[in-house]
Figure: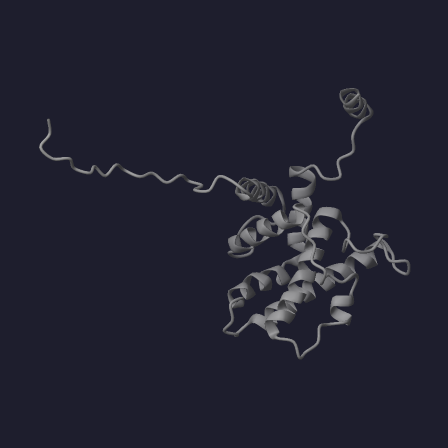
Length: 206
């Protein structure tokens, strides 16, 4: 019979991913696929300087997009540049407005090969496909640049985001390319089923 009972401190182990629940596995999967897409693309991670922070930003962006998030501030075509927010608004509010519009174009150009999800036609009636794509690329790049400008040198909560937005501005078309590789080679978006595959799916559904 022991004379005294002593509390024993057992070692505590923390898993590699502490919270393996909720949206975390989905985000881990997207990050993994994004990193693989970057290796397969012509713009690998850190290929033009450190940009691992951009990978984190993109994975979060993808998770929100694929979960159906849509921001009502998104404008179609070149309107974000032609019709900017009022200058009497707070700089952070305007920066976020530009960032949201740039994010939208980055995702749609990369994943869907169209500039935004608001217009019914992928090509404007008075423009051809190349002109429309160039306009959307310029609009997205410009919006990231304006958002970074509004946050640079300001002591606000979103100031650390400015360097990431600047990288997205400077290499906007390269990141569009990366998301295109992710869409087609990793996620299978836009894949066309063969007649045999379609027949098999219909047989399974019947």
